[in-house]
Image (cartoon, rainbow, N blue to C red; front, side):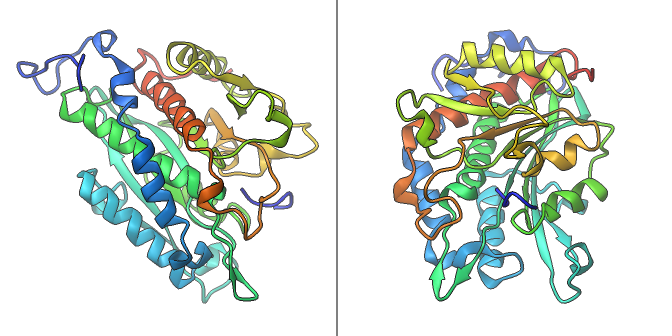
Length: 331
């Protein structure tokens, strides 16, 4: 997040025609959510937030290494690229940063909808962090390695459903944006130059810091902060609440869900560029902690079981949004 300023139980589909209307109520959604394992989360986050990535500062060699890693993971999963001509990268030019010499990349992966392919749910996280200062690597495990790896695991779970013949009714774009820490630049570039029109973007679920516990929540840590869920669409909020009850049933905390929040969290992550374009949003967030924007934001500090539960919640919510009879209505 940028600073204040800136298998079993699945339904057989072997005889199902490729584009037939399916009864998604028969699917045991948590079977797919349970493919999100602690082992994979740890393995991937320990690598993504390692010194090898050099803090992933926008335009740096470490950031280039990071986007190549994300592309390679999607290719291994056989999840196609979501950019023009099936590319995995959307090049963000220097002019988007006000620095002609700088160039970076958003990473896009895409699962096409079975029934409503032109309607797109965007699930996003920022891939960058703040780099190296005085020779010390700022690994950014929570901010936002946690969101980045969550996207990979969500895509893998949805791909399992695709393989079983239950691909989502609507399309899903897994969008890793660059330049968040220097002013939400990658998401602004995407929303100004969308690969899929903003009018057909049905919602944005944005994940930025979901691996830790806010010190204020230490006595009741099975929570996640939700921001923006009811600001543009009551439908999206209601889907989110219902998905939580039927999945992990954790405590959804709306303490920061307001435009008048003095922390200004609604304005400080990439969902905001979608909200500005009248796209309903939910921002998933664990709150700040003692390692926020410090070199001590490392993978060993992540609360992996809680992190896993939060990702399962997001999967259940995304499943219900993508497979609903109607897209979330604007207020």
